[in-house]
Length: 326
Image 1: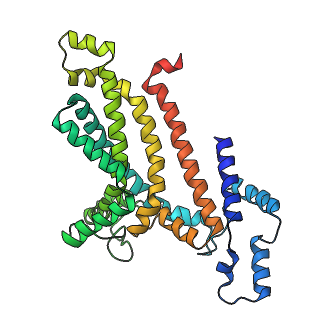
Image 2 (image 1 turned 120 degrees about the vertical axis):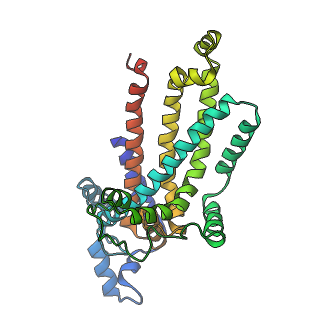
Image 3 (image 1 turned 30 degrees about the vertical axis):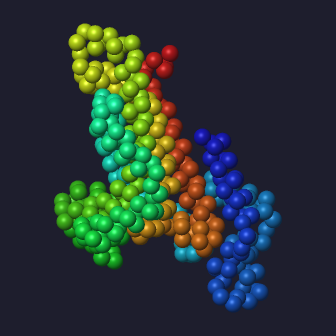
């Protein structure tokens, strides 16, 4: 994990620094004087050799100092902390939808292999894998906001600011704060706002989870132990419920972890389209304005989350299949 993070940090630093353009212009504004440019370069360390900038950057990163955003003039870590709850809720909601819909669809499709419902589910999953996220997001906005007016167009809540007068908890996670505070109206308002962006992100991952569930379930049904149970008169669904599902957990959990990382990348587009105040939207604005510290900080955070998730999935293997311990 340390080796991978070191490689990611190094590559990100070099790519961002070697891109054309001068980010210092974002700091000094329009028509700066030569003295202003030199002072800004000295303040941010851009006038030093690249290797010195890299060593200084590593020291700050190890101490969890990600620098100051050139665009917002605020510490990058504070900007990330402020936006992390919005992105986490969006990704968690999308992953939850993908799992509770994709896994049952995969099992049913495997049990009904070759039948009409299997063809229908497979076609639905292919659509999820094929449709571009940005296109699907805009279509959902047109249909469910423009035509049906069922869900809000954008944002995380109604109004320009979240009114937390009725909430007891103030963690930044709106669903947790409103739920445990008993503020049902604010909870439902947040739920309405997350449906469209959450469904957009869930659609593609749902297809991936469906296909891996269907494939592993079919392989399990072809295994000798499964045929033995059938010989004794057990139904397919009963065998899967009592024993067969265990054989599908390892590949499904692996794909679920990788899909979580895929969703993190999807937040860049989805949050921008739905004006979702999360890390993805912050990252897009930072990239467009060449905000070096912010881009690097977000990349490090996403890489760290992705690695940690896969680490815990590796630990989960031992719990799911004790034979791995041997």
